[in-house]
Length: 256
Image (cartoon, rainbow, N blue to C red; front, side, top):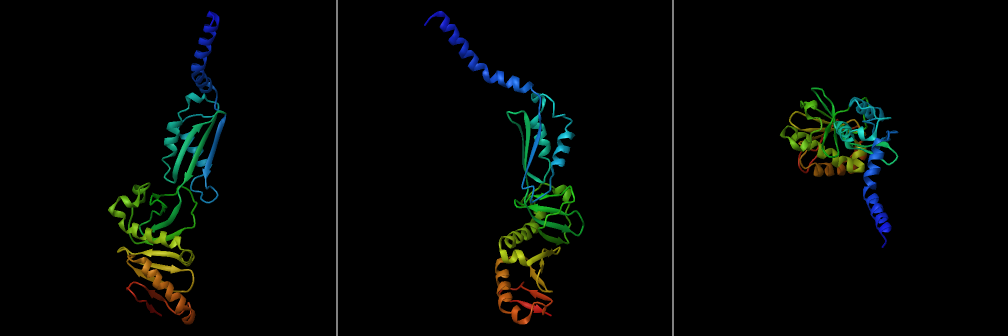
């Protein structure tokens, strides 16, 4: 190989090795062309809007559009967005077209808790407590309770992490079971939990309330109630009873 060819080969090799660095430097000094925000399942739940995300980005003090890409701290912006407990996932990154992409996935609410002390909050499908910051209220099962909870202090916390939320875990498991069953999901509208953790439910059909007592053995209790609905209610009439008590094992006690 001639001396010239060796020199050319060496130059090409160095260029290939340095090309990623050159591209990185060149792209980094280019201006951000804009922001694209993607909110997963935004048509189903609206806990967070694009305006909310933009407000969070602006609160960092960074002027994103028109700023050099390498001057934008996407890690800090991502961390700021992740402080919104309504979100399960938050990712911020740049694509080759110098667009800053923001992808967020909202939490899936399972039930809304309305304590007598105030401070309404939601619990998602992972058992995480979250408080809404806007007026949007999804249609989920409502649990009213006499218990007092500090919703602000519990925001973002799992109900499985504290002894203070033990009763919430019990009613949460009941609600998840109800939602997974097409009949009970359509039938049960409202759930009340006393300070002792006893459960009463209001069905969408009839004028009675269902007294469950403690939510232990709720599957068996609901199975007994279903049999009662199928066998007795068509004959007696859905408006015949004021209270249907399923608290006791193997029996149902009705009161007019």
